[in-house]
Length: 339
Ligand code: FES
Image (cartoon, rainbow, N blue to C red; front, side, top):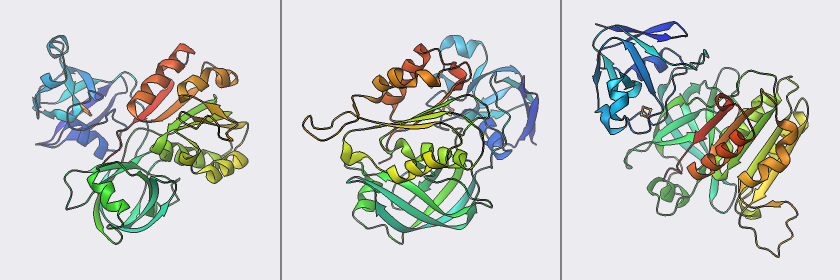
């Protein structure tokens, strides 16, 4: 029979069915459970269990060290319940998220954004509700595994039946190879979501966003959503790309700036632009641009939203922590380009 888990100090509790992981049950109940990989490798879901007994779906020892194992640290994505339990998640955010569901989708359109990035539209069998910044998992029957892509759009009232994603062509990638060879128009895909804990937190403080490469989608999504509402929060958005040929979405970013309630600054930074080009903007890796520009956006309640490849996230996170931004206000959506 179902067991019950209570999350402290928030004090919320939910049922976990036999065979279900604590993480699955929490997401199904609409809670913002910390997680990333869901398969027991990243460690994002680890927390301390103060009461109860779990069954390990895969061995925790792949990720947890001896001291953690001894202190009843568990991975919620790999823990089924043998008894009622109490777990400790210190910064548990009380935010209702739409529980993920399975959808049938059809790839109905592509549009080139740059030489290697496309906007892809998938028509779903019914509308999906989501929070700006979340992602979907896409599975094609001929290709092993699922790929995760962020919604590249703000949600509409009542959900969206046509969802737009930005997909970068990964050299040698099986799924992106077929997509960029135009073999997937009309293809059926299985879609699961929404997922992810990347959404704009409430607050009054300034917002610093940093997107790299195809990591622009969730940033554009949450800024387009925020631009619809009055809030008076100053915002700076950095876009790290290789060269001018890799910049995209500039019209949508300009529209966000026009609609924004308060100061809005857009800072593209190029790491690999030819020396002799006409580029007047900043050069270098995006993390080096933050300190000189971000001064007026620094306060005790500044929030930072980062999306891009892991080395960029790590470099930018280190930079903003040095600028005394509070760690719990730094939200990162790390991704490996899905191939
Ligand atoms: Fe990655 Fe559980 S979510 S280890």
